[in-house]
Image 1 (cartoon, rainbow, N blue to C red):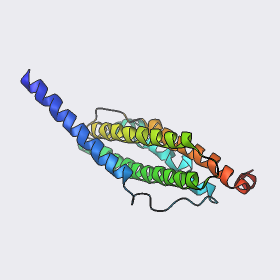
Image 2: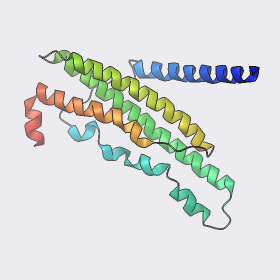
Image 3: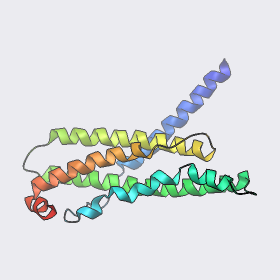
Image 4: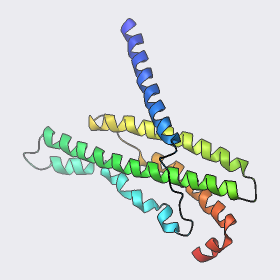
Length: 183
């Protein structure tokens, strides 16, 4: 019984520490240093930019690799490690994009002639959701590298898509010429 309590305590402390580190990174001022240029809508966030994430951890490549004679577990582990490293690089890029969009939204809210308290709440909600999703994904990536779990990439992209939509709508309110140039 005591070892169960010790195990639960250790797991809780690790999760709390991970949350604290990730939350500190999410709220640090130097992470998103430059706001997004509103004129470059294609550069803001293209969903196709993260399309490779979906296939990166897919099991079909592993199954294909297993079909060849002479492929052992060491080669599979190396493939997994490489894929996890690439996936984490995409996660860092996603992290930066998310925070650049949030920072740009905040700047537009400050300069907007209309008060948008609802948008401030949405940003906080999406930042919290994104933080939790990043933590869960990191845990699943660790488990995936051990061969135990799958990683859901769609959950990572949902908060980013939500703030991107708000950015586009707020930017068109701030500068109607942008909506005319996109049409």
